[in-house]
Image 1 (cartoon, helix red, strand yellow):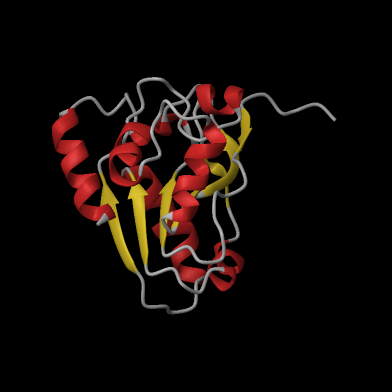
Image 2: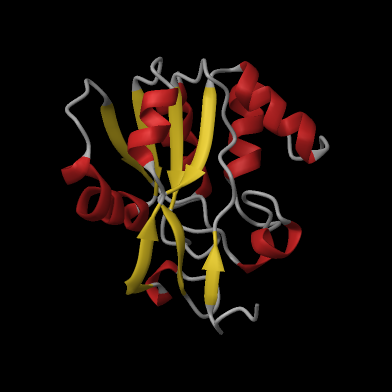
Length: 169
């Protein structure tokens, strides 16, 4: 079955049943889709930050990094299951085509979750618009952090690191 031009799909979550914290992006970029790995762009700060926070160092093989996240109670996923988006920029997501992941089932399967960190404004905005209204009430802390994307160059690296490390404590 041919793929619709510009249609992209996210990955399965990195998570185990004991996850306490969920990090949500919007949709994997082209480098991540090509590598089939979350945050694969070499200039994305996600892995350097998580390396410092929990030892998921960018120099480790991907499977070891994701295991360090799981061992630390951290889950990673994207708000969207699929959408049309030419390129990698969040601004290029066609919101009319955007379909969110099944968060009701995810939250049901991860009862230990207490905090959700949004990797940037787009992930938060789409989640709040498409997902949150349909979710049952649950005591969760929601927090938007500066995007780790290299496209988010207006915030200095040190400021991103400080915000993320404080939120991950």
